[in-house]
Image 1: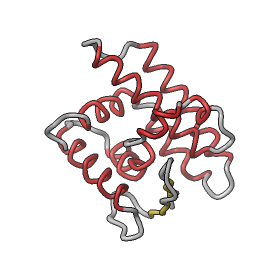
Image 2: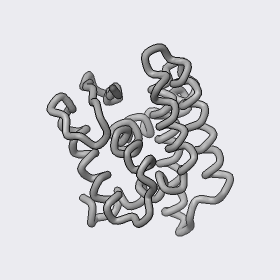
Image 3: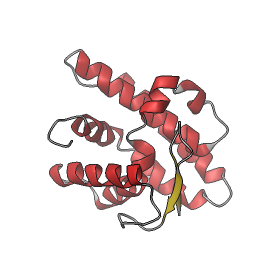
Image 4: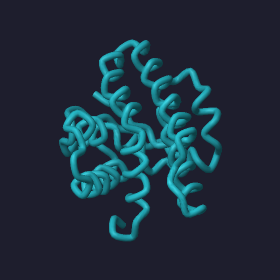
Length: 161
């Protein structure tokens, strides 16, 4: 089971199983999942384990504008593994937007910084009672930061709106 909480609101929910529609998911979460699935369908050769992890974690990786607005550093430094995941995702999203604004791709240092943030969050999640089984999925996400960045970039495309 993955916990979902939407920063800046009191909206929470949980989901079980990879890629399954779950009536308990808040509306925003379901919209994000649908958009991410649309983008994933357009990206060739996404490994199955990564696809499953992204589908499951998408509400905690994408659409985190509130965290970006208030600043993701406090989330990266949090004792909460979920907040660290949000911080890592917001860090990557900021990098993607900055690179796009400058007409370039993310550079190796930016990718590595985000990957390290995801690894740290995955390690913390692995130490969190009741959630240690999620470390593998998060390490898969961390090890595929370039693909996560590509998804973020495509999510901002008018074709996905």
